[in-house]
View 1 (cartoon, rainbow, N blue to C red):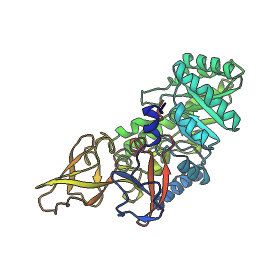
View 2: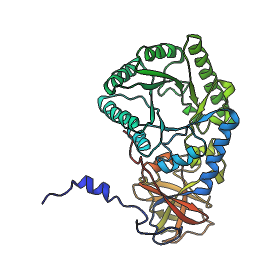
View 3: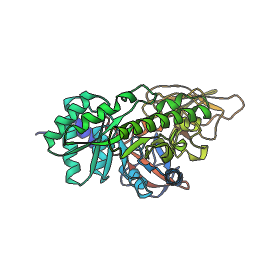
View 4: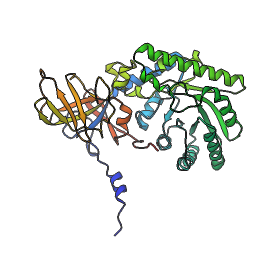
Length: 393
């Protein structure tokens, strides 16, 4: 008798912390909620979404959140309902998850290289056309523009393309001096539609204080404003000038020549955004619920390791922070274990006790979960599917 491939069975039967037959709402402490699990406070999420929608409205900017933080169609719909014009994605598979979920305007903010990615991009563009959705691609080199030209003729339809500009992070992005030439190469083919420029000033994380972050944002604004002016002087229409992360977007406005911001982390926030002055403690919506599984004198071990919390580390908090327990700190992580030390004058949590761990980098947490759980006032009220979990190709 034939059987399904093991990988297919595993994907279909992927375990989740809360069984499908459990009816919501239930209390967070309900024993049917297994750990480790990721929970998000929906009241905080709503406030975070409203706050950034307000920032964009006051500064005259469009808001296109980055979906890599939540990787969830349900969360993207919340953002769009609050005024976002579309969603940003990091890869073809992530973009496909959003288009398949009914998101009508997706920016795929990653240069596509290689035949397999371009094959998937062709299928994505066909899917988008069937749904009357728009998918915009990004390039930072002549080679990628040429591959998009071939792709456009392959699918037989016009492809919107933006040029990514390096404003100081030195990861990807064209030199600002070369943007006009790239725009010309896009406009040279009638099946490629030049839609503007974008950047990501991720090096703002390296700033040591708030004036340093503002300085990065102002440099981002200066470069992008100058690029826009140069393009317009050369005769190009520049409908979109996209910049601004969760950290730098509050320092930008339409007066800078920017038209759109793309914050991502703001919907959940984490200890990195807190450390970069981009949120307050009560704006951190996500946390890991974990159980103490072992103790020994001042050492406790929980059932959340680097497959849940990831190895992202921060000098102040280590691999995370126990909410309301500043005297308990991580000493190490292994795959399924998180080991912490309890300061001498504090009580040691007992085996079986549940604790809340705040994230260092919440975006990576979400890529490890098939679903997370929405909480309101201490009760789990919603299952939130992570539609693009492990969709990094």
